[in-house]
Image 1 (cartoon, one colour):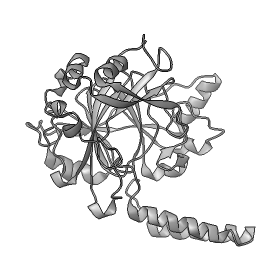
Image 2 (tube, rainbow, N blue to C red):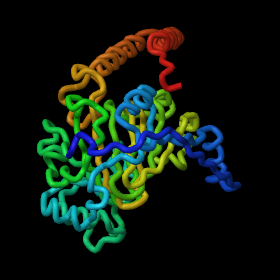
Image 3 (cartoon, rainbow, N blue to C red):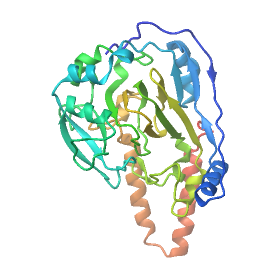
Image 4 (cartoon, rainbow, N blue to C red):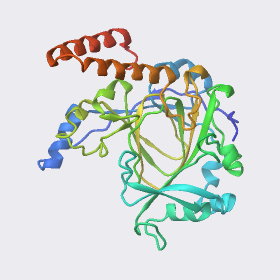
Length: 351
């Protein structure tokens, strides 16, 4: 994997595309119309041919997602076919997610982990119906590459898939010492990953197939019904608004990724990814803060920053202390705590 692009495209400008929605008289249609009125779709900005300088000066400081187009990603765009990948990686065993349903849910674990030779895995992932399967003939497959010892080693395509790493050119829009991991991803058509956030900036490089990516600002975290880093709202297109009424307030950002596109996802932005076709991609994560800010045991890039973890532990202890008070006092001082937190932490970054 070349961390420097061999050729940068012509500098371009950011542009947007608008997408409308249709209401309907049926219950589902009415709900969708309500969602679109309360949760309008905001197209993710695009930038064609952004140089490193333009990215760092004009795009990166805004801390918002952007689809980068026209970047030279190397021969992977044409070389990474099913046959080529099968030959290049052979019978190397990989641990994959197998799901009987398209919408994967990490919280309820509606999938199983299975180990397959890579060539067998990619053959199955590219199929829509299977003659050999674990759960059902239309099961879905998902690979998120891991280090040889996931508890101690990060995913790095240069180490786990060295022959493939030579084919891809990652835009060098960050310093080499900031690099954290490069995650090889392969998804069956129709597979949808749960909504979650990461604590590091990353590039989602789409090598093959089309993806739909829906994102939510960190400011909308109160509306996403979080459990750890993940949202409990599994179906973001047809959510149960009786169960999750605040979800309708979240502002939905959306983009379509095609082969050769690179999506910049800033840290803390929630994202939900659907592979509309058999998809191949690489995520590259980098540390945009001091290394001391991150949990040293984190090999996935999704553990909260150490200071944030400490603050949450202190908050939990404070809330437990409030339980010693009568209800009306607990309510009053709880509200004062909320006001104090808002006064000390409020930011206009995402407005």
